[in-house]
Image (cartoon, rainbow, N blue to C red; front, side):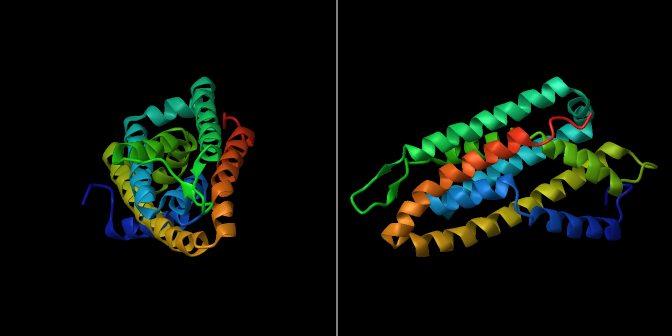
Length: 213
């Protein structure tokens, strides 16, 4: 056990992290949409990319970079608008997917690296994750011991819990997608759903509070 972290404290953190990870947010919407339109396998790969970004933010937080981003309005805005632009691009791209004679979406062949990169880019383009870490993780840290190993360990635990929750959503959405996709009307709905989801996320990201400072 890392000095400063106790089994009971880590258990409480895990319960809180699970509750937070299960709350639908931008990443969940992205992964559910991916699972509905490209299948659970592609969504799993994107989920690993998303949580890799979470690990990156955990390392940055532990190293003190989180304070820089939290206090730099310019850097925060840059990351924010990169994320907005990426979501809009995903929405436009989803509208341009080809369809076959049965009205089913024909997604492009998506390799492991491509699916992983989509998830990673979305995760990195969400700077509020590092702000969340700055607000949430210190509550479970003992300042009488070295802080950065505790922050890093809790960040890794949060990413693992997040990945498990992501996989659950991917599997659940994949089952729904298979059932709905058997109907032509359902196929048309699945073709339009990704664009609506991506544009909605872009609007949400663009209209949220610009910077906590």
